[in-house]
Length: 512
Image (tube, rainbow, N blue to C red; front, side, top):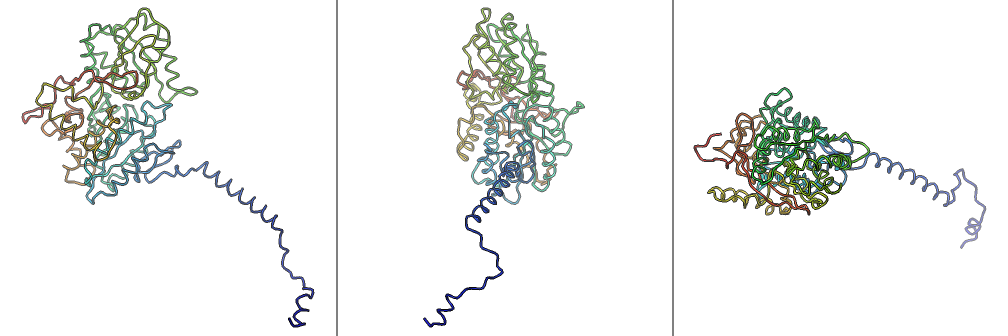
């Protein structure tokens, strides 16, 4: 190396104006602090704004769930148990042809078990039934299905209905189906849809007065594929009348917001065939309880009736209340001490008791209970239909449904036990039939085609032939299976009853 270069290498260097380099340890601490702050800020944002709360198009967030019309068929709450079905709906909607029409399923799709009477499995089965009706075959492309959520007790019905109305034209909405349970809120939703010219086809709503508005006027655009509570009470009365012992007591929910319980009790009270010797009333206070669950509250209340029931010694108790309340009632009878005057009792209720299917019940306790209910549908009901030439036709219609449900979509047959998939299938199938018949794309034109579904042009459904009365929109000659709930939660058939005493006449000369 040259000497000058060597001297330059070791010569003292002039200090520059650059800031001193920080020790690595200090830089490391600085970035740790920055990282922690960023993580805390992001974490805090996610706590208050979790990703699932970014509700999709047509939806708004209310009490940690999404309500409205799910235009994207995305999740409606954290860890949504319907997520797989929503993804299936989105996939099938994407395959729809240009001339599609849309059917909306309006329900409480995010039930809260602490306050709501309908369990999520029941809702899930309804959605599965709707899917089977919308796309019975793999190549079906003319229909879209959308889910609308009005939340617990249909509290947010306005948000759901407003979105349905706003999107009716652009999404070719032909009809709304389902509408949950018989509450004042659901009736308000039905009435508003009717005012907007949109037809609603109820599935599980059975309250007699649900087809009239608060002014007592007929809601002209409302139809239902299920029975009325009068039909159910009539079926129960005919069954009780055939029993060797029929000393009867009535237990009824008087919650004014629940029109299901009120009209069920009214229909049973007004019948003349089976006298009611005793009655007890309770108020479920749905959605109004704090600091306790509905079950805890009602078990305590029903235990207070124990001695009255013992003294009354009924052979049969007609329970006009929700299925979830019936469960509390059975537990109270079973666990509140022996009753020398009453060792066993038959308890008969309405179709909402189907929500107890799959729930274990203490039926051999202090007072042994045999729980029965008038069901909307049951998978083996047609095995009880014999001695009529039409039986094979009804069975074939059910087989067609099974081919779509367990064949096309590979849903489990066990999901049929509570009947909800069958009845929702028939509501959607009826909407699809009317939409296909309607040459217009207007959402307000399909009503006439639904009204035309009478005994001469009945829709073949899983629960029987669907036909509507012209004056009320109610189903004609609905079949009602009477089922028993076993201790393990299984349902077993007891009888098959027609609401008008006979199967629907679908001959060319029929009248409705």
